[in-house]
Amino acid sequence: MKLPLVLLCLLAAASFGAPLAAAVLGVDARSVDLLDRVADPSLQHPLGTDELGRDVLLRLLEGGRVSLAVGGAAALASAVLGTIIGLAAGYVGGWTDRVLMRLTDGVIALPLLALLIVLAALDLGKLGLPREFIQSEEVSVFRIIALATLVGWTTTARLVRGGTLIARSQDYVRAAQSLGASTVHVLRWHVLPNVVGPLLVATALSVGDIILLESVLSFLGLGIQPPMASWGNMLTNAQELIESAPLLAIYPGVMIFVTVICCNMFADALHKRLDPRQAAGA
Amino acid sequence: MIRFVSIRLVEIAVTLALMSFVIYGLIGLMPGDPIDLMRSSDPRASAADVARLKAAYGLNRPLGERYLAWAGAAFAGDLGYSRLFSEPVLSAIRPRLVNSLLLMGAGFTLALLLALLLGIAAARRPNSRLDRIVNLLCFAGVSMPSFWLALLVILLFSVELRWLPASGIATAGRGDLADRLKHLVLPVATLTLINLGPYTRFVRAAMRDALTRDHIRTARAKGASEARVVMHHALRPALIPLVTILALSCGNLVSGALVTETMYSYPGMGKLIFDAVMGNDYNLALATLLLATAVTMGANLAADVAYCCLDPRVSLR
Image 1 (cartoon, each protein chain N blue to C red):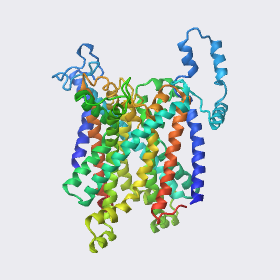
Image 2 (cartoon, rainbow over the protein chains, first blue to last red):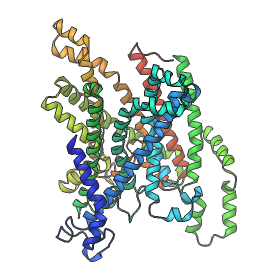
Image 3 (cartoon, helix red, strand yellow):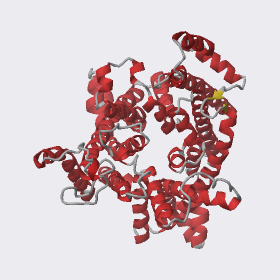
């Protein structure tokens, strides 16, 4: 449990502290130096420079900032959306339940990556969003968060619905209802605490998946847009440069791999802590 | 059973109709439009020409009307022309579908066999050294970005060792069997590795669960050999959940190898979908996406039915 968490914290601290350190040292992740392209590691550039002479270490840290922010935000958003849908389906029951669960199954049964490519390629201008928002640099970050949320809520919804169905028929929930507690109160204080454990595990597990999704879309040119760095888009050009600068293809991938494996191991450890009985079998 | 299947078939048909409309609408929202593209490639085209072209292709009509026209033609078997390949959509799809089935079939079979081997071996001795190594490999497998794995494989076997080609399905001017097989090795190996992690995890968990059941103890007490206990008494029930994986992979047959195919410039369905979407090839994108959706949903239905046939305790409502 400890090692993955420590690594993740270190990574977060380094990524989010990088702009400060860069400002103090007077270097910039975006500064292009065409005379110093694909340079070997040196004191000035500890991991060398990329095909435009940008510092690889600084870009890796900027990419980490983007990946962690996207992973965290989208995991949180999917958890919230999934919880609301799961609570509604499980507690209200009847037609609401049937419609919501068909929707969930439907989303799970779609060829998601192919459809996400269409969604990622949409022209936001044709959707009528304001121009200054579309042209801002952060728009690709928000787009990825929205896409990941759109496909990420299903697991949580199913989990929460299952937990809610069990809790709904418990005596203490009936007691609260008969005492006149509002639906929101019952859900918040009597139903939700039952599913908090699996919910946390599923959310932690989804962070890694979202980071993988972000990196593959960015790699294909549909995610985070340059000049903003992301581990995925740093690899976009690496395939062409693979003969001359193979290391450029290694670093960002190692970062993705280590981050995602840490997230997954942390989620697994969390699972074992919170639910020792079930985890022993798996 | 028949009732269940027919209800599901109706559901699939409704979903497909709905999806076709959604995708149709979404594709219209992608950047660029075919007439603008024609216009930018021909500076002499005037505004009047553009209007005439739009009218000729029906692009000035409202979305609903255009969709109905497309759906009517599609229902009659006419999916239109592909702009990228300058041939009917169906004849652009056919060879690529075959390529994809070959790639996915080989990758899937290999991964499944290896996963059974590793998963069973690990599950037989929980917490042994082998079990822990397999567990670690599973974690690595599910945490590996697929495109990066492909990059590493290319880097090692094509760039450094120069053993195998890294793109296409045949060398230009050749194309005999040996040459084709050579081009298949790296994509198939990559796909196998990508699938290996999740499959092994699944087999290991299912086998571990199966081996703790009471009937296993009974079988051992009766003096059944270890091989018979594992292969007959434990593996058979453990294989049933594997049907789900099998079905989901079948669904992916059509679109799942998108990343691998793109990395190796392998002309399959995944790359076709990607190219069609990126190249504004509306007819092709629509047809391929719908095909992928239909196959995925059909495979899910097949899994439910198979589940019911294999496990008498499961009944379909």
